Length: 149
Image 1 (cartoon, rainbow, N blue to C red):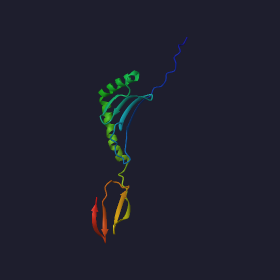
Image 2: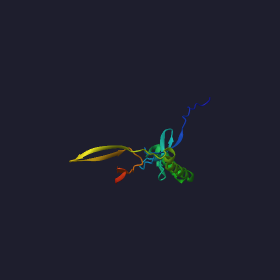
Image 3: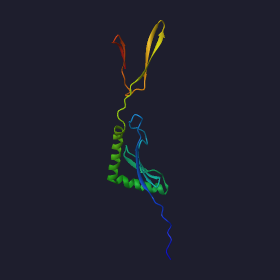
Image 4: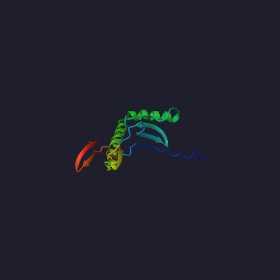
């Protein structure tokens, strides 16, 4: 008689990493902004921060926590894993320059007259520009009246 073995479920081991970018293309410097995960069949085992770079178990206790702890310790001693984390960290630092060209946008302006007693002053409102520094100049007959930075 041939023994019956139930079919084995496939296991998938996956390494994922990400870098969180702000809308202007800069790196977000908060917790969880540059991470690496080692996942077994969609169950996180090893979590790491690329800025360290360091790794540790994702879960505390239980069989997955024990496995994650063992893997994290083994990976922590592996020079190739450390090199891989440093390469991913470097990529996170280079990624914004590759993805986003320097953003520039001209300012939107609105000039509003405001009455100050018998005189009228002109107030200039500027918004929506990048980079975030501009110089506004008032001209009177092509002569600069004053600078506002």
